[in-house]
Length: 316
Ligand code: NAD
Image 1 (cartoon, helix red, strand yellow):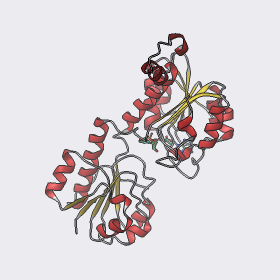
Image 2 (image 1 turned 135 degrees about the vertical axis):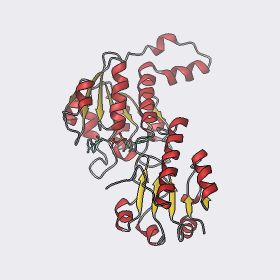
Image 3 (image 1 turned 180 degrees about the vertical axis):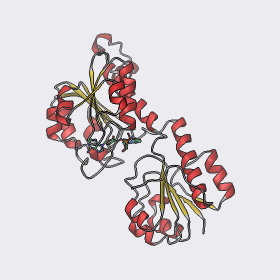
Image 4 (image 1 turned 90 degrees about the horizontal axis):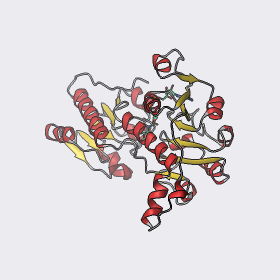
């Protein structure tokens, strides 16, 4: 039985190095085979996952030698961190390494929806030359409302500032005197006021019990008529049916979402709407971000297994 289990597609030079120095069982579909996964972890000291492997109490019970769980990414919603910590299993992750990739995707969504890039592209490739059909708008002078003003939200705001957007934000925990608020001239407001003031709303909260369906009928109604909604955080933060209704009624002009309430989603719904961009949870998937993520988690697994200090430990 292997020392380190890798249950999803996690590759790169640091993984190669880990494989040459340790006994690693690498199987990118292991996450999808509960029985094989349970057997694999029975003697392992480490498991490295992305977001599909469910690390819960039942699995941890079958992994008595486990010292470290490493999540190659930022969110820890597929890891029962309390159960791990209560068994003295260290939980490592990569909370910063893919933030820039997500922020750039959010900017890409905004630019695309402002200028109808995908619609114009599809139409032109069908042989048309409909210039007057695709008169867009500029980001400059519009208001961006950032919901969840943490690492990614701040990166989006910084980039939007470079496009001369006005900024407001809602964050339940961030102190309003945080330097970046002043530096970027961000108006910190209650959620309903951010929604009412913004031409674009970009969501960057973590999935927590109190953020599940943070965006529902009431919140979409509070948004400006003709506004655009962007979600690159977690699908369950949004009541998708409410978003569909807000788009079908044309209260919202458009939306883009990288994440869905269930992944992969059932056909239909948001994906059927012309004024919606959907991507398959690729926010973190830039080559550069993936290198940073894999380097960090491999270094931390190596550290834990050799008695050194890991750099990115989830502290609870
Ligand atoms: P972060 O922890 O730095 O920032 C999250 C912010 O949300 C914090 O400032 C926090 O105070 C705030 N917040 C928490 N609960 C809130 C609430 N109820 N209401 C308002 N604000 C609240 O996290 P981050 O690195 O900026 O990442 C944000 C989210 O993006 C992650 O949690 C993850 O779910 C998502 N993400 C998605 C991808 C992707 O592939 N699409 C990749 C990485 C991260």
